[in-house]
Amino acid sequence: MGDIRPGIAARSRRGGWPVALVAIALAAGCTVGGTAVIAPYRSVPLESLSAGPIVASVAGVLALAPGGDAVAVADPVHGICIAAVRSGPAPFCAKVELRGKLPVSAVFSPDGGTIALGQDVTAQGDGHVWLVDARTGDARQVPSPDAAAPTGSAPVTSPRSSYVSMFWNGGTGHLLLVANATNAIGATTRLVDVDPGSLVPRVVSPATGPYEFQTGNIAGGGPSVIFTVTRGDQIPPNLVEINLDSGMRRETGPLGADGTQLVPLAVSPDGSQAIVGSATYGDAGPPRRLELAARTLTDIAGLVGNFALAGYSPNGSQIAMVSTTPGGLVVQVAAAGGGAARTVGRLPGVLTRGSRLTWSGVDALSISSPTPLAVGAVLGWKLRG
Image 1: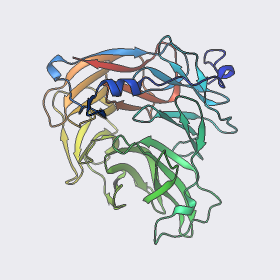
Image 2: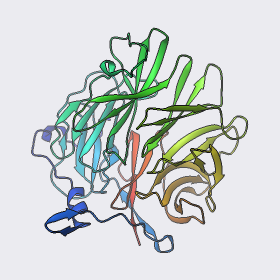
Image 3: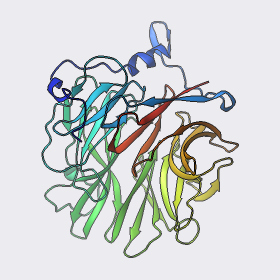
Image 4: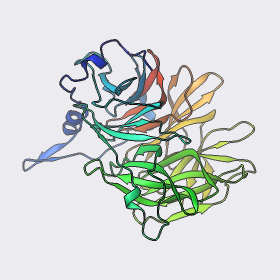
């Protein structure tokens, strides 16, 4: 983690680097009577779609900004520093000094203005989370949700809870966290929603109960969050869906063939469907579409290789996927409702377990990685057509 460019940490107190995504968003809109209006997102037709890779020019990258113009870089003292993808203003660092456990992780908010900085936020971790202003480096720590337990739940008896998972909801712009807790009935986890403006951690629902264990596989979109949990010595995990609006939690048994372990990859912007992988003892195969209301799995025509990453377009009409094939990692885009997939690129190297793929409103596919990436690594793709 100490292999980033010399001088980044030393420049951490200089003026912030402006995120270009704001200018891009305004340029995409129009004005009516002096009021800015953002034009609705329109997908590029598959037949004309192509993609150009965005490559890391520095070592230690954890995440690519939604605009494809900035990166969050691992720093052993400040957690992350923000740098331009190519030439630009001097890098600067988050105004927080970390103590204790690694690893450090980072994820940009959907608008690119905020970075969630996690320290030891892993399925078996004891994590803390900060929200970092991507323009100035100012950092605010997300407080514990212990004082905000859901009505009727058992009181939390642990001295504090820790965070074990984090990701952004593209629809609400809120940060979603999974928090550990211990109460009178044992160890549990809770789903927590954080408004980056107020920084108030709202406990949405219990996530797991006693004798249930998080697998670490979680995804969300619109009002739906899905993840998998195991019970005792059960190998195939159960699927859990939580509605962010109502707090309703629904758990169903294993889906698919015997021994199949479902891996949530992405949830559509309206929360009606998801893309999931199947971790099996044999060949995992391409990801499949999961209709959340019916709990049915269907194949997606034209996909090849074993699943790796997936992400929905902002309007939910298309899906981007990265799959592992004998010839390397392949980037494909398909219609969400079915039909042939189009290959738009390839990715050298391998992907770290726990990586995520995000499709932004300016047609940039970005990868966030739980481990720092090397110089020359592909961080994402700019779609065009």
